[in-house]
Image 1 (cartoon, helix red, strand yellow):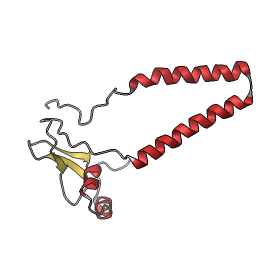
Image 2: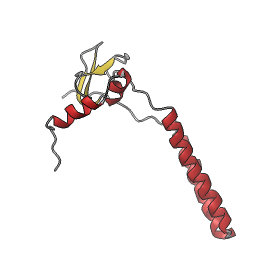
Image 3: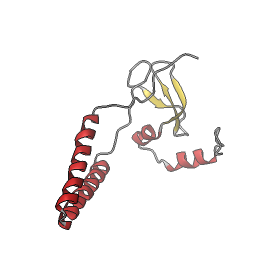
Image 4: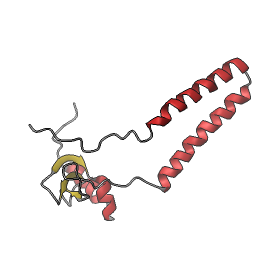
Length: 131
């Protein structure tokens, strides 16, 4: 079986942020343990909670976009495999197909009602039934 590149590779664009975030968390923990004021805990908890709410709001206002880049030919020509399903991708520039990958975001880009796709996929028997 020929090896093919992963459909969506994990990017490390923001991975530099993890070590400083862990260092800040450790320093905040040390401050709370050694200084002891309870108001520090409330302040830091409020900041972390506020960051979570801000992240949520940004995700709602600026949702992710579908990546239409084909993993084989690198052209932005991915489309749904079937117009009646939100499962499966194909490339119109080359012969690449992936029948198991979700095409939900591409269906969402098309602007059509999504409910018929959900109901059609729910009625289709799964090739991988739950154990």
